[in-house]
Length: 118
Image (cartoon, rainbow, N blue to C red; front, top):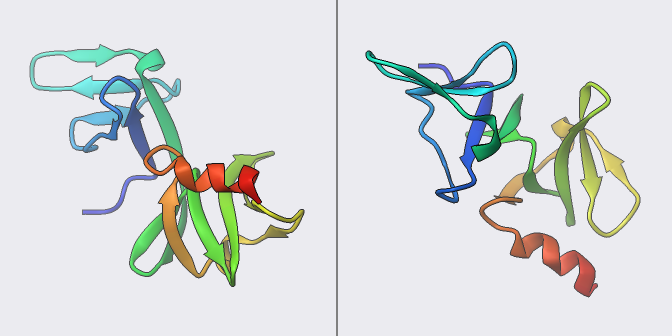
């Protein structure tokens, strides 16, 4: 099985969904599909795109909080490409520069709060 090009966060359940029955349709809506029905509700989900890059056997997604050397950065999608921004400096890095994934903005928001404390 190949890794999906996105991951889906359920705002209501506060967790990532298993993508077996969920997918993103051509309109960008999240669709739940079973043998009997298809259910669509965009407002309940956050879709995060996959960069296609792998570090330490894990795919890198937008919203990931990563290390580039000793610098803590976030992976974002904007202007048609992925951007890796430092939390503490104005440095911009490449996705290929990422050394380690330490969390993400939805499951580990406390990692982003440390930015304000420094």
